Image 1 (tube, rainbow, N blue to C red):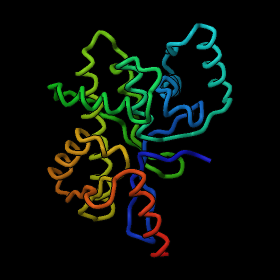
Image 2: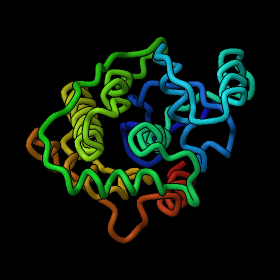
Image 3: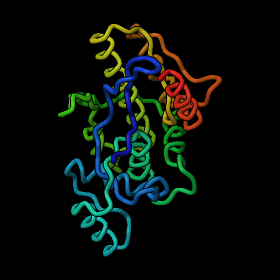
Length: 232
């Protein structure tokens, strides 16, 4: 009944265990959220207890806020792609996307052209089920700060997430004794994020694998399901 995403999986084919993820949030709009980044921005801001109204006509904005507060049509998600969508709405004021991934691609381009070593340390703690979750909430005030350059905010997002990924991997490596990490899923089609995470993980002493023959996004997930079925 939830939309997973941003997952850290430990193990091997036939024996994977979910050990980490991003902080979950209530997302409204169903499939429409992928084409309407303001929905993700609203979900993250409101989940974090921050005041924010979507760039909609006033009555529509109030209705959206009331529906979210009442849990109407919400699904629980931890998807990394929706965090990027939210950032695109906050930084670029993107309301509608003509294709899924438009906002994240624009942020990737901005971050690649920006020079910044700044980041936000995202708190990492276990939830009630023992899943370690990185909390994106600390980034939101800066991502929403229009007084700061858009490129700097985009770079901050990528660096903060790359460091959160590394923090999770190092924690689990210390706990379970592995020495290799695979970066898969659609979010790692983002070259800035993938390359920065790979550098940080290597500096932490972990071998890094990136998709080459098999796609990193949905095609790779489908292939992985076949591997799982064969292993089981």
